[in-house]
Image (tube, rainbow, N blue to C red; front, top):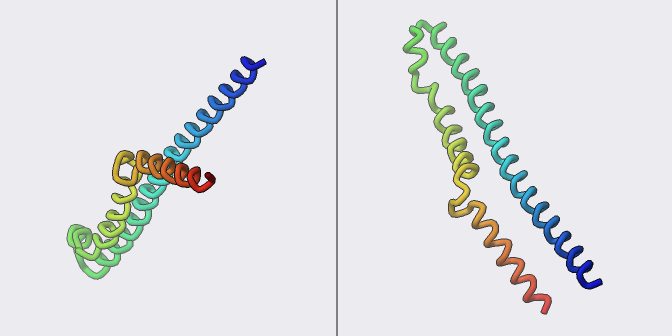
Length: 119
């Protein structure tokens, strides 16, 4: 009887660990997907604004190269690009100061605090 109970307990623990691992992997995939969507939107929106700005400048008499290299064209690319780089760092550098290891350490820390409060 005791052997059956131990097997059931082991099965539940293994199932719980698989579920937790799946949730961690799902979170990583969601973060990666979010970054790729951000990158896609960045490229599309900035390209549209660049096209509009270049055509406006060409209508004012600039050559294509002058219109393309106008300093006003790069502000949005640079500012939004900084945000995109930060997003990428957050997604791809998982062992950084606030990466996966940090999350797991904090979870364990809070769990131990919670356990001590119950005693």
